[in-house]
Image (cartoon, rainbow, N blue to C red; front, side):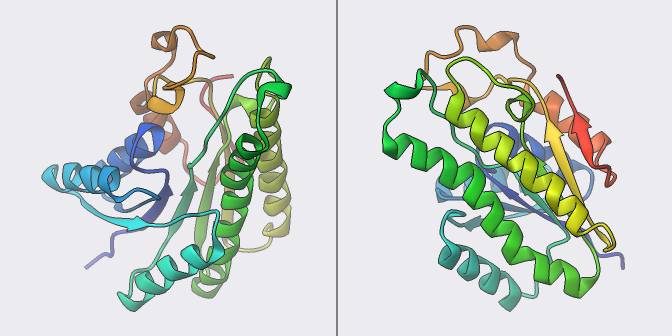
Length: 227
């Protein structure tokens, strides 16, 4: 019997994370749905299983190394092997720089940058041990150019871009692939409670973006959905 590949997706309860989970599940992957809040993860888990797929919700705060270790230990106790990681979780606060509080800045950098780095660091020994692994970092076009009233968010995405490109060089002679994913804005709950985007309906749907990512998920260093 061929074992289903397992993908750990962060921020999998809503938006692109949810769309990625559903899209990869339909292609035969087993999905580990990670996030801080159990309820939306359970909702996606039930939706996947109703469609005949396999998924499990795993609550984890990626900004906390102890939470990451607890999640990975629990998965290892169940003999669950992770084949791919999609670092999708992200937050953003928008406006002129002086309008952002220190708490806002910390939340953006802790989630988008530190969380991505900590979880990747924790999984690398497992990928190296099994001599296989694939990492996709969801960056967006905010990692390609500056944008008005997005200074800290863009800074976080430039950081993940640099992290991804450096990790590609570090792992160049290993069987572990690292892919940086760049896409434009999406019509998702990401923009709720913000007036930064006036009409998000002009954006691509997360389902469209997820399909594009899956279609090009072959280990290439970059995926461009929409510049």
